[in-house]
Length: 247
Ligand code: ZN
Image 1 (tube, rainbow, N blue to C red):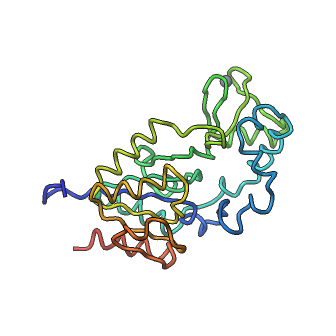
Image 2: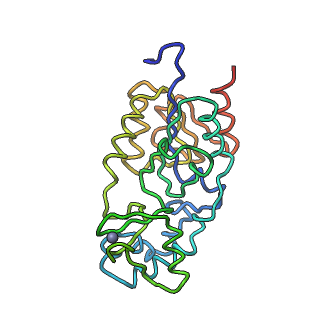
């Protein structure tokens, strides 16, 4: 361990869809995922279809308008992570989720790395201007079926990374740095099958972090993990994180 005895260990928490199912957000990639039921839905989140087909955009805005993501509330697991940070433990969240629930639970925005962007923000594909998704949704509710950029008129989308788009290299670079520097790495509610997020678990183990996998189903990294926890995240994570602050 590189940390001195007096310093608090850096805790990294990688989170996937499984942490948010208790908040009512479905796992799109899971066995009952939306995409399995409606393959056409994948077009709505594929960059080329989205940019080239106004009908796809109209449908995408209707999906965003009805999305439970924007009204979901954080659950016990999100609150446990934020509570650890409030207790003075250095914590960084690396999330595959786009629901913004870590921040709503009280994690400072700068300590949450959203690998796949956020459903709570829009971005202009032309000028890069950003704003709160609720503003764009309000325009859809008011009758616009494909609201354009308020600055340049360009096509708007959520900041979530679509198929055909790259992850933000700055965000990914910071995630790698935290993964290498941490002493404990929790992988929570992620199948650890989607790269590059999944590879972070292996990287953490390679760099000497204690790897704890908390997931209902087996993952490819269970074998290299120091601890594998199958119990429900909503009870497991508060218990595991509580042990870090128990004296
Ligand atoms: Zn614009």
